[in-house]
Image (tube, rainbow, N blue to C red):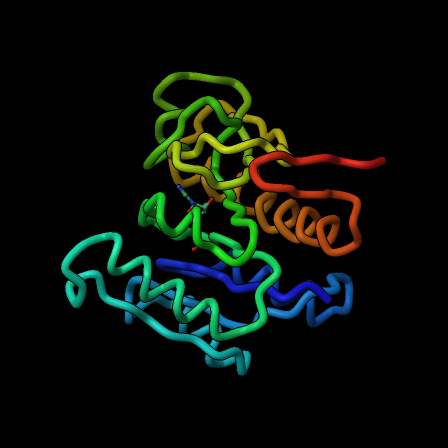
Length: 201
Ligand code: GAR
């Protein structure tokens, strides 16, 4: 199976959804390590409970972003890694990280990119008044939420939605889409080379 390293800053529901798919036997992958930039991230407790190695690095312990990212890379390079999976990882990665990473990096974002990049994508969608939004899995490059799009799923924005209701509806779709994409990378239906994606049918 595909060896994954997951980076998560917070709640960790996307990490958990991937692990659940693996446990159910419908995703041929193994999460080798969960890393966080927050020692108190619930994602780390979930990893520990699942018996997955996990570690946290604090930005305050490093002089700058590059040094922090190099420490992160060192941890990643110490385990088998075919794919780096950002799952609610809220720190922008430096160019050095992207260049030196031992495997492709993918991210999931709670909007239909290129609409609503950055923080609070679901609130941006509600405030704008769009009638559909969704989620996007994309390659990570040095432009924030700007890498090649791998897959998208549409979610309706319903009358009366606020940020939280829309976020919950999108999140349910994220939990399906991310594992689907990782599964297709694992079985060769999605091929990633440098910053380009090829999808075979
Ligand atoms: C998810 O909705 C994810 O798409 C979003 O943060 C949430 C993390 O939830 N990511 C971003 O906004 C990245 N810019 P989780 O910790 O429960 O997986």
